[in-house]
Image (cartoon, rainbow, N blue to C red; front, side):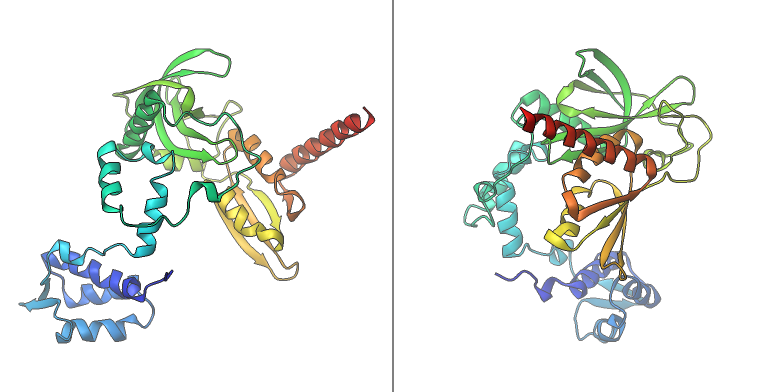
Length: 342
């Protein structure tokens, strides 16, 4: 089974997108610019002559503008065998029902009935994970999840009825920002913005399994900034709130030194995929330096994940986070010593 097909590589993608845009006509200069911006450095020398000369009978010149000869369905790329096999494997994942309707799943099952899965769930042995994962088969959970997804896609506010860890029931208007998944906890969490009094907002994280109901809200987020920019700004007070004026600087990132042993870099990229990161290679040390930008309320989650890497990851800063790492390790050593004495 081929992992890469040149047929559906960069050239195919670029030409397909040109043909889609050329249904309304494109000038020669627009096509040239599109190829230069989206293909390889020397692609123009290969693609443009074949397009303009008619060797590839795909476009036609009408009064100085080029129009596609193909319909929309003609440029749609079919799935490769590998992609079909991967998709068939996803259909057996218990979380797939959160992202697709029953009708969509039935249609996919029918279309892929003759395809062998790329892998099976029993091929993987998962350890060091929570036993109380989210109830993916619960109808109310699935309904709430899909309403949150819809709100994220439409960038609209919602009203959530939520039960906290202390069994306090709260009803809040919030602006969803992103859904995060914790592989260690097997839980989905909603990152959102909670309006406060006046022009003040607070970043919050909600366990989706604790959300009792979700309804539409007519609240409108301030036009001064969008939810994405809000999450990247660190001009917050001690309560995690932000007022009308926005700080431009980012907070101090967690700085990690990642060794080459045990596929540490690849594991880090997977574990911290939900956070904004910058990674570079340090030739002198022969290791990678990874900077993770995060929200203060996610600090404990990051701390636990980083500790799980053991000696292949070293925390370089900031000092406050490094201090917490040391405190956790000292407590663990003390607990181990007590158990050994017993």
